[in-house]
Structure formats: C-alpha cells, structure tokens
Length: 438
Image 1 (tube, rainbow, N blue to C red):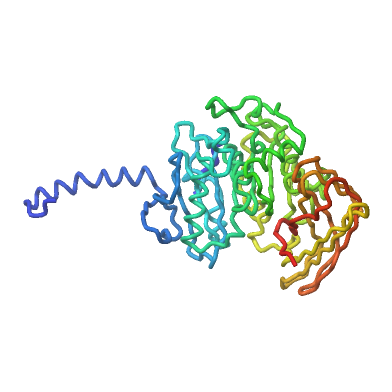
Image 2: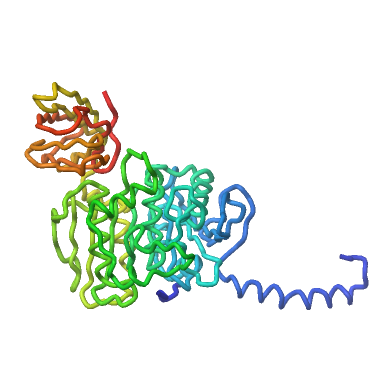
C-alpha cells in the first residue's frame, strides 16, 4: 500500500577553512534530502512543534523500530495520542506524508506517533509468538514504549490512546488492541486481518492461509485468541473499527467478517448489527452493540474496492469513531456505579446497576457489559439470553435504552436463572468504560 504523498582545527589558514566548508555543504544537503520531513532529537522533552521528528532512546525496543512524533503547535493539555502504523514497504515518514493524521492533529490538538520498521521487508511482526503476547517482545513492545514516552512527555490522557493502521499496520492495530487492552481505547484497521490470524511458528512473516481468507473460527474462538494475549485481564476492552474492500486480493475479504466475529465477541456484543447505513456510494457500514458514532464495533465494507482502499477523508471518519473530533453524536457516558448481589442458588442471581451521568449533556442509549465467573450461564437477564461457554470467563452484555440528563441516575435490576456457581459478575463496563463499585 503506497498512499499519495502530501504534502577542527580553526587556527588553520582561512583558505583551508573555506575548502572544508565547501566540502561540508553538499554533505549537509544530502542528509537533508534523505530525511526531508524529519528532525532528530535525543532530548527527553517535547519535540519541535509542527515538525515530524525522530525520537531515539524512547525505551525497550527489542526489534529496533524507529519512532517518529508529530505534535501540533496547539497541542492540547493532556492530549490524546494516535499511533499511526504504516503498511508493508512503508515507513513512519511515508505514513506521515500519505495520510491526514498530522493535519487532523493540527486541528484537534492531539499527538501522533509513527512507528517505523527497520527490517528489510518493512512489514510489522504480527506473526511470531512473541508479538502475540503482552510483553512478549518484538514490535508491540517497542510501540508500547513509544506510547509510554509520549504519554510521559506530553502528560497525555491515558484514557485517549488510539491505534490505526493500513495493511500490515492494520494487522498491527489488531495486535496492539489484543496485547494492550489497558492502553488503547479504540482502534481503526484499514485492510487488516483478525488478531492471531497471521500467526506462524516457523519464523515466517507471511501466512498464506490467512491472507487468502481461508482461516475461519467461531466468534468464541477468535475472542479467546485475543483474551489469551493477556491472561487474567478483566478490565474494559478497546472498541474497534474495521475497513475492507470486497475486491482485496492481498488480504482477502473474508478476513473482514472474521474481524467482526472476533471483536464483537471480545466486546460482548451480538453478531446482528444494531444499525446499517451507507455513508458514501458503494459503502456499507454496520454498527454492533449500539447505533452511535462510538459503537463498540463498527465495520465499513467498500464494494468493488481492492487492497489499497485508504483515501483522504477516511481518517476523519476514524477520528469520529475515536471521539476526538468533538462530534459527540454517540453515547457519551459520564460514570456508572454498580452494586451486585447473589441470592440462593435455587432462586437465581439478582443484581442492580445504578448509572449516573456526570457529564454536561444528556446522552441517549447505553450498553452495559459484564463478565461472568467461569462455568456460569445466566438466562433471561434484562429480557435476553446469555450462554457463555462453560468454564470460560466470558464477556456478555445487556442494553437499556433511554435518555439520561446530566446528574441524573437510573437503576436497573434483574433476576435470572443460572447454572454453575452463584457468584455475581465481578466487573461492569458502560460503553466500554469501567464502572466503579459501591
């Protein structure tokens, strides 16, 4: 994928000095030509504003990635951070030049990190066992170090860290959200494959079965691959937006459906879209879990489009999904408080959940997700049926529709028959954000 660019011996005679300077000028010119948009810095402080800058010494970096940062002149206090990951044969500077993330940062005040591969293929490692495990090594560890450096340097908002990428970068977006669900709030993957689909055990960077669209799993199996990257993690999971062209001949179109299966399962939402529309000619957009711009999962299919689907304007739509453009069109919960109790085994499970909007504007519609203890199945909670796999810690959800004004609260109760043990859910999230207990 190749997007279109945007875009000392000073006491010697004076004659010797002039000769030295004359020789130095072309060397400087050649260096500038090799890195036209980049300036280097070793400093621990903020990089020069409105300049793509390479940062070195940013932290643990087992696969020798390069880090480029773009910070606008008007960078916000406690800014959001967007990690923009390039395609095979690409680079951080090429991603900077070929996408509009820098111009969007100028407009909205966030910081952009552009990781850059140094290995010959210029493809990110989304295949090795090390890459598919939190802290396992390889590229994801280096990218996490880049995020940490940026967060420290700019005092970034830890709840507004996002990842996006094209092709190999889209695959890495899936991997980052699986490895580091506690770091990233959401991702947008353009022409990618599910987390774990490209896995290999022989050191190869390429998985022909996955690229050919022949690797299929159930939603539960796909979800388990993601959950296996960070065993024991029970916190909120990042939202996901996926894009794919129906005529993709590099990472074939069935991967799009497998990504949807994976992330709807991870986020505990159903396979049936909550909304379907066509925001542009030939586009079909489906949303899962809610109907707003910040739904848990959003998928955009482009009819008749090949692998190189990315074009200007798409990053703006991803920015809306991230919630960084101030659109506010999706549910924007303030906070929720949760109380949950269990009754005797033979009478079922009871719980009450109190939601409080601590924001300044009303929001309409929300989605509660909760994690069941291993081996437990709940039926008829909030009028729906939930049947997680026996013995698995499985995320599931319930929806309650209505408008909640600022400072208002609503309490929802349920009683449900169940099998397995009688423990109440241990954690709840509201639209992907963790609720507090009590």
